[in-house]
Structures are given as structure tokens and as C-alpha cells.
Image (cartoon, rainbow, N blue to C red; front, side, top):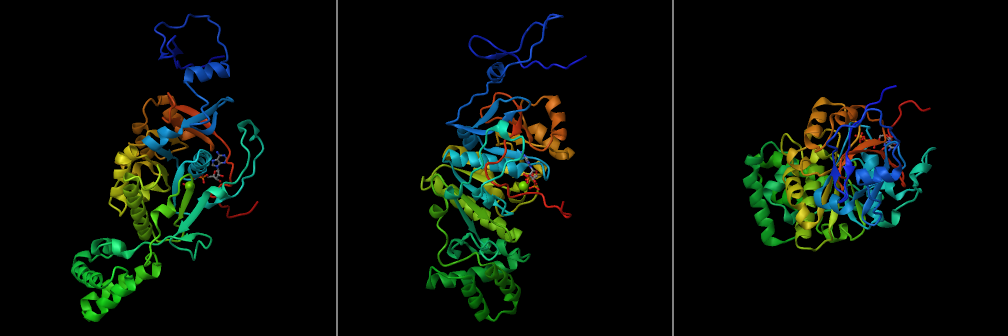
Amino acid sequence: MAAQVSVIGYRDDRGLLLVPRTPFRAGEPVYRAQAATIKEVLGLKEDKRHGAYIGLLAGHDVPVYLDINTMVQKHVSILAKTGGGKSYMAGDLIEEFMKHHVTTVILDPHGEYASLTEKGKHAAGAERFRVEPRSYSELIQVFSPDTKVNSSARPLKFTLSNLDARDILSLTGSAKVRAHLTALRKALDLLRQATKDYTIRDVIRVLEREEDPQNASLIDELEYLSEVEIFAKEGTRIDELVVKGKTTIINLKGVPPDIQELVVNRLATAIFELRKVGRIPPLMVVVEEAHNFCPQVGQVASSKVFRTLASEGRKFGLGLVIITQRAAKVDKNVLSQCNTQVILKVTNPNDLKAIIASVEGLTTAMADEIQRLPIGVAICTGGGLQMPIIVEVRPRETKHGGESVKVIED
Ligand SMILES: Nc1ncnc2c1ncn2[C@@H]1O[C@H](COP(=O)(O)OP(=O)(O)OP(=O)(O)O)[C@@H](O)[C@H]1O
Ligand SMILES: [Mg+2]
């Protein structure tokens, strides 16, 4: 029988991990490591007070904890192909954040996270993880720009008066930004002289009064914006949205992509500004489908703010959890700042390349392993871990909202 061995190292008297200088002697006995030895050599600490319990070391009953302070200070990425288990894993992390009273905001494009309020059910074989199903409904609030689609959510609205003509035009997706800028600016100036609270309807009315045929397509675009109903005289207050120790889900289901980008941009910018001056508590911002909000190629409304958050968030206690199925398509400036990485199954060669380039200390064997990881197994690095390790992701306490949908029922 043959086996392959890779040397991790040993702990010296000072507790430092060292690699042996001399080769092993032929014929030496080999032992199966006990949990205590594994914990010591890998440096796994069971720090329940500061740690997020994410699962068990693969093949062992050794629990793995990621340090929550490290995650907030140095950001997290969760990377896998579609259906790889990213949202499931993110749910685990968010449950741990709630358990530790970490203030969290989730940008949820598909409305998958409201199920954190519902108690989960356990599959057979889940006992070894020692996780009890529970609900976190008392810690969760849900907001949405579209309360027609998401009827149980509280409305999320913005005040128009904070936006200038260019912001508004970038929202409309109008190709004729230049042509419309002057007309819109003039209309806004006029309104501002009269009042602080104006609506898109008011802007349209002013433009219509001009009776300039050139304004027709601008008016069309604004009509579209006014139908989406994200503006109101009284915007949602950020300190109502971000509440110490609570988790706020921004449910963007049913909201058109261009409006999602605007909403995310406005929110992220406001959260950063208020955090800088200490008006809201330190927090974690979870970004699902991050390739849409901070893409590597091209510019969307929220591109800039995520670069700023990734590079400066640390100083203000504002952490990001970046989730994507296309690692290669997320802004490198953002992804490279994520020091804690959770990697599930990835097969796309470009994404693999992007991931391998960004993980320190990943062995070639582990890099190969990424393509073969079964659902529910992750490679984790950072987060206080001393080296990349393979983890069997723990079952959820709450219901997972992103179940794959079957076309044909069982
Ligand atoms: N650790 C796990 N244990 C058991 N089931 C899991 C686990 N992780 C994922 N699954 C299951 O796999 C399926 C896909 O998981 P998930 O929704 O998290 O994928 P995803 O990576 O977020 O996909 P997408 O990119 O499409 O959003 C779900 O049905 C989920 O229940
Ligand atoms: Mg998902």
C-alpha cells in the first residue's frame, strides 16, 4: 500500500510552526493524529467569544472558527461556481454574526436571505456538527425599494434633493447624457429655489412647461424613474436602516439592474460617510452577486464606492463580504483586499486562475482540489487561520433561501 504525505511542520517550544530540516528516517512508524495534535499543529483555536463557527476540519471532528474581528477589518470573499454553495455558506456566517451581535447589512438581489427569520430542518448525518435549528427573526429587519413585489418588507426610499443632474441621468440609463444635462440642471435649479422637497413628477412638470421638443426623450426616461418609485419626500434614514446588533436585509428582488446599482451605490456611500463620523456602529456589509456591483470590466454606479470601502473600510470598522460566482469578473482592487477567503467548487479556468493568484499559501494539491470539491466542502484561508484548510461547512440553523429549483418534481 502507498500513501502520499505532505509535511505541515511541527511546533517548537515557542509555539512557532517550523518545517523539519532533516528527512524522516525510513521505517519510522506513522500514527493517525489525534484531535489535540491537529489543533496544535494547525493552530486551530476554539474561541467561541470572537470566532464564527463555520464547520469541521474535513475528515475530523475538529471545529473551525474564523475570527470575526479579522473578518470585519480585512474583508471576506466567498467564491464558487453557480450552485456551489456560496449563499448557504454566507448564511452560516451571517448566523454567526447575529449570534455575536455584529451589525450587518445584506445587499440581496434575489431576495434569498429573508429565510434567515425561519427555523431550519436538519438532514440525517448533521449531528456531528452540533448545530440546533433556530430562527433569528427578532434580530432581522427587511427593507425593499419595491414593496409591491416584497410586501412584507419596509419601504426603502431616497430623497431626490441629494442627487444632482448627472446622478439622475446616470440612473435613467439615457444614452444622451450630454444633450439632457443642461435642461435637467436648469429644471433642478428652478425647483430648488422654490422648495427642498420635490419629486420626479415635479421635475417632469417643469420640463413640460418649457415646451421644448428636445426634452421629450428626457421626460420619457424620467417617467420610467418615477414609476419605479424609489424617491420620496422623506427618504429612509440610514440610522433607521443600520441598527446596532441587528441584521438588515435590503431585498432587491424585482428591482431592475440599473436601479439596483443606484440603490446599492447610494446606500454604500451613505453608510461609509456615516460610519466615518461614528453616527452608525461598526458593521459588516454582505454583497451578493458582487460582479454586478463592482465589476472588473466597465463602470457601474457603485464601482467607485466599493473600491473605497475595500481599501479604507478597515480604518472605520466597515467590513465587506464579497460573494460571486465569477471571481475573474470582480474588480481586482476589491477582491485582492479580501483577506479571509472561502472557496467552494470552482471549475471555470479564468476564475480558478484569479483565485489561485489571490490566495497566499495555497498548495498545488489544494489548487487542484478546488475543481473537485463536493457541495458543502470549502477551502478557507485567513480569518485568523494560520494556513489554508479544508472545511466541511456546518448545516444552517435557519432555512436556506436559495434552494435549487427542480423542473420535474420527485
Ligand atoms: N453545506 C451544505 N450542506 C448542504 N447543502 C448545501 C450546502 N451548501 C449548499 N447546499 C445546497 O446546494 C444548493 C446550492 O447552494 P447555494 O444556493 O448556496 O449556491 P450558490 O453558490 O449561492 O449558487 P448561485 O450562484 O446560483 O447563487 C442549495 O440547494 C443548497 O441547499
Ligand atoms: Mg447564491
